[in-house]
Amino acid sequence: MSIEAAKELNSDCHSAIVDRGALERTLHEQGEVWHQRVNERCPHLFAAVPLFISSGEVEQMHAVIEAVQQVVALSAWRDAVLQHAPAIARFTPRAKGVFFGYDFHLNAEGVHLIEINTNAGGALFNALQLHSQRDVVAPGKPAAIDNLEPVFLDMFRNEWCLERDDAPLQTIAIVDEQPREQYFYPEFVLMQQLFERAGIAAFIAAPAELEARTDGLYLHERKVDLIYNRLTDFSLQQQSAISTAYQSNQVVLTPHPHVYALYADKRNLALLTAPDSLRAMGVAETTIATLSTGIPQTRLVDAQEHEQWRQQRKQWFFKPATGYGGKGTYRGASITNRVFAEIMQGGYIAQRMAPPGERMVCLEGAEPVALKSDVRCYVYDGQVQLIAARLYQGQTTNFRTAGGGFAPVRVVD
Image 1 (tube, rainbow, N blue to C red):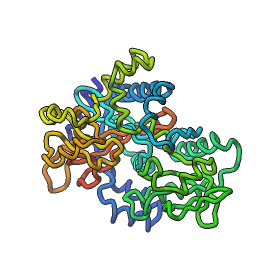
Image 2: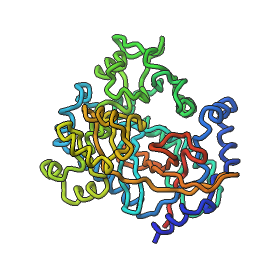
Image 3: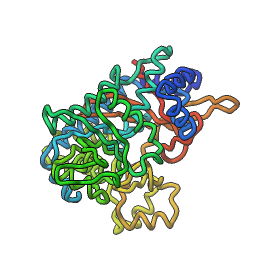
């Protein structure tokens, strides 16, 4: 019944709205300049409505995440996925990796894990939005641990303790290419402020500003203890200073290439949906069943099956094996001959179509519109901290849709 209740609420654009005034007040509390930057650069960051999901769907997502955790813990899994990973991925730190994102499509057939990200952005934006809506009356309950900021801070402290025991954590660098040009730069600032309030010096930096020395990694003349890694160069191929310091254990890096290889390389989805291969690894039948129903069938694209792919392409969604952020992804039904030829050259996976859910949105002066919904579980060390949604139009989540963006998730019993 809760699934039907959630569906009914999502079909009614008047069932609940995000209190924009309360959200704006919370955003302004982060600083006037910061607030202005968000409104100017990210006008569609926050959705106009919450998304409703059922408690049963939450349980299903938790079960899929737990099943993935069980498989990844196996030495046979590590041996299999590290075979095609770069050498740096075989370096095995103790840090678990912060802010995993398990992205799901929820529809009438159930929950469908579309991909796993090991540097998922947006958790602090969603925490702010949740905080701003705490007094808003709406059906269901929030899908998050209470008081998220200390939870996030403890996660980084735990990463440090796993690597350095009780040594003091003094300096964190939040690192991305051209960070001030990134869409999520305002979240980097929120992270910096979170660390600084806890008495940890924090800096936002590009990798080119870092230098590996004999005694550690330096940002100008400041030694860096820990890097919060937002780079999409997942194997650090272009980041020699970080790579050197990381592999010589002179800096704590989170997330890191090892967890990317274990979880987020999209070729892994093909292995997670191959029951015979999982059996050979010793995976339990109940776990295989959970993965088979919870992850759309995924296959590696092989040019030798060119004609078969051409005939079946409308049933599949094509993604670069090491891609991110929806870049280079294509619906088979709308693919051009040129793009199809490029995909056939290799480096792609194909995932059976699993349509996203929908949420009706009413905007002032416009007809009601159905936006697609993508549900993200933010996870640390197997524990779900927060479930949020992204509402959008188009092929992939894009933060360009009026009324769309990050939406708070409410769970209906």
